[in-house]
Image (cartoon, rainbow, N blue to C red; front, side, top):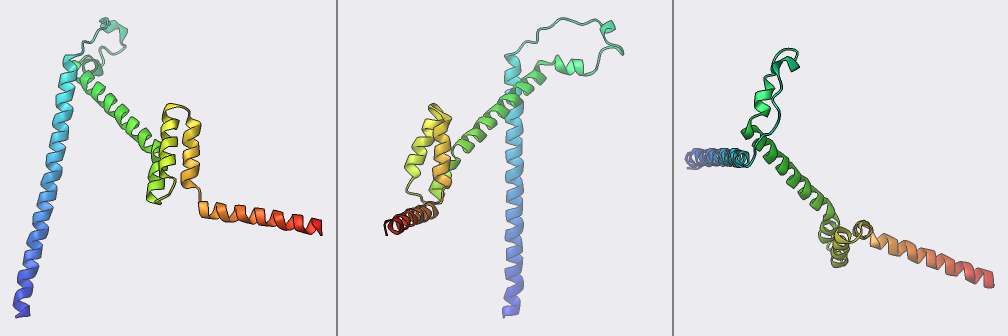
Length: 168
């Protein structure tokens, strides 16, 4: 009986794997198509807002006649695409800077630190007031407080031992 059920189970798992693979592929393709439609639509929309101004250069200005790229650069649709890509890059850079800014808060939350709220407050102060507060938040977030407390205790203990020896 187990020999008969094994091929059925393996064919079922093979069907499930192939169905999952097809779903994943269709999902990826649909996301890609949506992204391309947004890109083209935004480029066309932004091209309607633009007008390319410039003076016409005579053909004698160029050594081999008009360059073929000149028609592309004079295209309002291409300039809309360039504008869209530039804005997308700037938004992505702002997102990356925000992630870098929040690295101290994420580190404190990951370590379940008792200092998470003060680190968050210092990060916000660093964002709006002065970057020194952000640096302090980074130091607090990444410091090993158990090691620092132990070493500080050793320093105090050794200092007290030195004063006792001096008194004797």
